[in-house]
Image (spheres, rainbow, N blue to C red):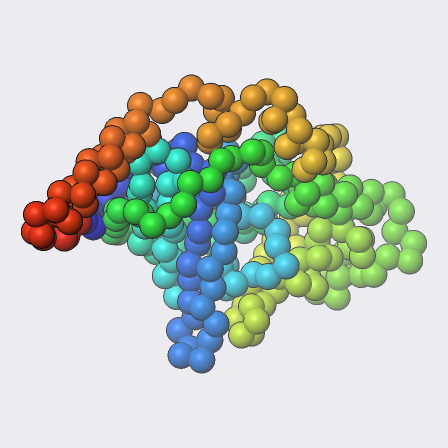
Amino acid sequence: MGQFYDSIPPNLIEWIQKQHIFWVATAPLSQSGHVNLSPKCTRGMFHVVDESKVWYEDMTGSGIETISHIRENGRVTILFTAFEGPPRIVRLFGTGTIHEFGSPEYNALISPEARQPGSRAVIMVDVHKVGSSCGYSIPFFDFKSDRNQLHQWAARREKFDAETDQDINGKPQNSTTGTQVSEKGIRAYWLNNNMASIDGIPGLDTAPNSEMAREKEVWGFSGKRVYKSDKAMVEKSHNRGLGMGGHGVVVDKSFLVGFGMGAVVVGLVGWAQILGRGVVDTYWN
């Protein structure tokens, strides 16, 4: 049975911080615009400030729908779902604010040393309603490993940005500022792919031309990091014996409780069939 709260309960905060994936839903104001739903990994990039505020580090992608929609109207819903342990779905309904790469707000939250390669913004969400529902139909999945492919791709591009001022011959110029932009760098990718949504709503505004974007030292941190291939990450996880949730083979007590509840339901089904009573319908509703 679904429950609603005005803020995030402490037990849900603890649960959220253990998840590996979440989804972000946004939509434009136009009735003919495209509703968007984006999957995201947590990987140390999702943060709960308090019971009414969360934020996550937004990575570079082929589109800019979430940022565009939030910039236009602020509406956003974040969804988490349990893939292990007791079933659960949690929705965070809120109003979003965009803090682009290089802005004072972004810099205050993410230092160059801690920044993920390809990070382009902070998505801050003021939560005004929280919904928790059963998730009985969601299947179980085992977490194997985070993927490194996006990090590898972004780190390679940022390396070109770090070297731009050393090798600028033949590189295209940014017509807005006149500064040099490597055609293979992340800034050029932002300018070519992240400036507007598929409906034409403005996306990134200041990030490609920010003062910090012109400091090669910022991009240098990515070039110093080594990210293993996705295959190597999965093999490493397997060799360590990572199973359910990627946290080893220790059985979660809450999972046992959920399993026990499932056994109770199965028993009720059997009695309902024998006695001809609506016990199960009463239990589920």
